[in-house]
Length: 102
Image (tube, rainbow, N blue to C red; front, side, top):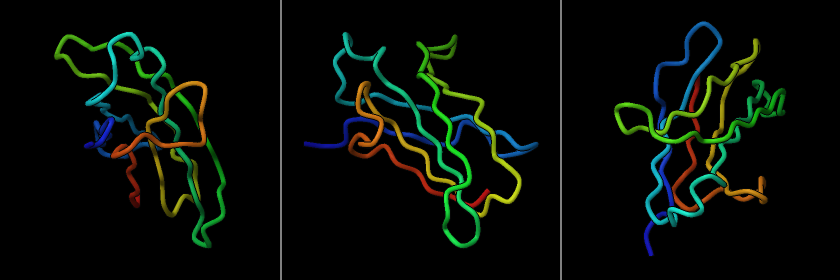
């Protein structure tokens, strides 16, 4: 089986915030409301310095599901964000992880 979902930057991290586009690939319609995005900010040594969670809303006028905005805290060297399904916030869905430098 392929990935369950996909995540991508909806915009460039700027002014200390970012949003994510979420695409549900193998998620049943009845379970879409259970999708959430977790974001973890890490300092230069790899220590987590912030975490944030947002539910994934229904599609906007363009048919996109945009979660956020999330805060990029000062001192962040790297960010990991992933889609998870309630009630399991520690398990990213297959194919739905992004790591980047803001």
